[in-house]
Image 1: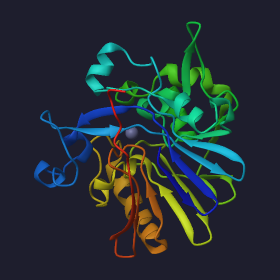
Image 2 (image 1 turned 60 degrees about the vertical axis):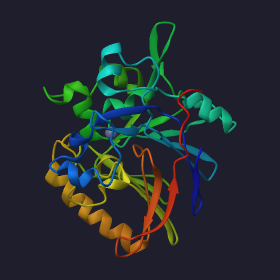
Image 3 (image 1 turned 90 degrees about the vertical axis):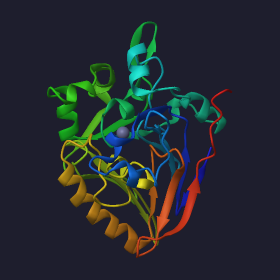
Length: 285
Ligand SMILES: [Zn+2]
């Protein structure tokens, strides 16, 4: 498991599953000859996308950014359609760190699409229960409202199985919320109406988790947004603003979906000055 120390915060990438999605859909209007140079694809034009939650250890607390694909939450058809070759190993990842799901104090949900929220609940005696029994689940109010009342497009990704069992644990916010000293979530919209990012600052050290506004390192260009985005122009404007801020501070940018890089740091010109690669996962193990 890869780790990154950013000021007081220690980040660890857990094993939350993998998806293979159409490359075109992940790069919106960008033609394949361009995106194909930035991110590897297979013979079906699919690209590998991790769904790996990031554990943040900060001041004795344990926070998680998003929750992975979960286990036993997808039907055979969904597994096929989403190319979900592997589901979550969150228990195992935490155990390697001497932790259990009970040690998680809060889950910071950037949004509640199935590939981020399925790990919030799991099956116990044929009943769905919260995976993180002691955790507060943070999400924007807009996201929470849409999750419970999806429209005809978003109903495909906002599943009752992922919200009903955790509704008592949810804490919502409007524009932003402070989670701990230096750590906050900020509502952006764009990818989904209620999408939020995570920001941490400790003196000169900082990281920005842009979630699905910048799902991989290949999405650095502010105009490269997903066909999945409900409000792509909002994504572009938000990304433009947050890239400028992050570049200026030489912030780390962290990724949930990237199969190749866990985090990248850019200078004021947007050039890569530091990076954390992913150790390639062995699917046969
Ligand atoms: Zn996603």
